[in-house]
Image (cartoon, rainbow, N blue to C red):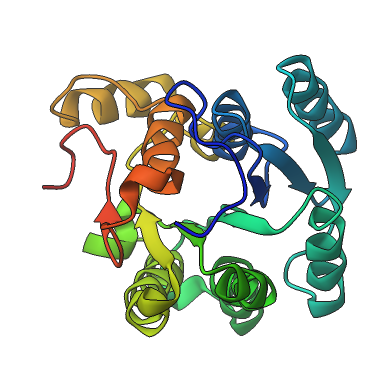
Length: 256
């Protein structure tokens, strides 16, 4: 592994620089904290939730890692460039987690072109821009971990979520193709496809709908953001060097 940092079994990411998009709350927040506990310095990206992002940064610094909250709309190339430039103050970006995204639940016939394009920009174009911006640093260092947060609906497709499923399925294809392209450069590219995770994206469900979803899930509960963070942490670690182009789906058995 081409790295200038000291490896530790207790803090396997010691000194590595990580960028987590959409890291102010929910799954992104849990991922940022998990990487920091493993020793990484973390750039906490947010679009609008400055106060929440500052709280994540404070928690990371309390662990002894470095962190900064960087406001950036990752659908905009100029913002992405600024985000990656901010990360280089800590060193070479070695970990990128493309987590920022949006959801939409409606019939395809009710989906406007503007809504379709918004989903594609947030869920597919943004990972493309962020990945392209960090890839040059990773290839030069001959080491990198790129982890894309997809969805079970990117695997199986979801009724009433055609546009969302298409964007997340595209992200999986992006992951698999890029993994082949950069494998000889020491860079791995993988996806995590969560199932029903108890975050703001499920707040629209009634108590009866939540209960039905819990019962439908074989393990009998909704997922927690930490369930996703654990999968990301494994893929981000040096020990996952032989894992690339894969989709790990923490979904409680909902999709098998």
